[in-house]
Length: 236
Image (cartoon, rainbow, N blue to C red):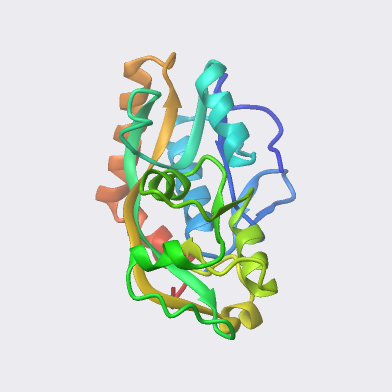
């Protein structure tokens, strides 16, 4: 999905939005009410763009492509991105805009029986997104049973079809009601993380500070709480 035009020379990007975001009649990305984190992030960034006086144009890319653009092309903005030590010096940061806990999920008809994170090394396959924090977290801990996907939807589909045994997820917001009934949270916490808006290194610090100030204003005014209530699932 793509918006028509860019915000004052900035290219604003997101990723992994699934069907919880739609294009409105004006060609802009909008969140589906109670659609979950991805819907909330889009609406939050729209509010920031409005406060800054920018067009509310946001484009979707696969995460790997968005990371490449944000690191190699000028004036790019990417959200939501986990702020990790490996990424710290690659971008300038605004936030945190949300904190999440990721658990291992499994197919309820094919339970793995894992009790802790090390047990997950013994299952057949674990689905992770290319280039994301889950991938690196597990690889750094010696996991050799990782299968790559381009979206959380892809991991969910593989879980449903029995092609993988586990996938680290924070919610099932990308899954429909039938899929949610089939998938089960194992209760095994994989990691906790904070999501940020990442800005390419060429963007002046003064502009980054404007973004942070706009976000802080949204939080202080109560708008952040209102957006969260409207777009996060009632029962994550």
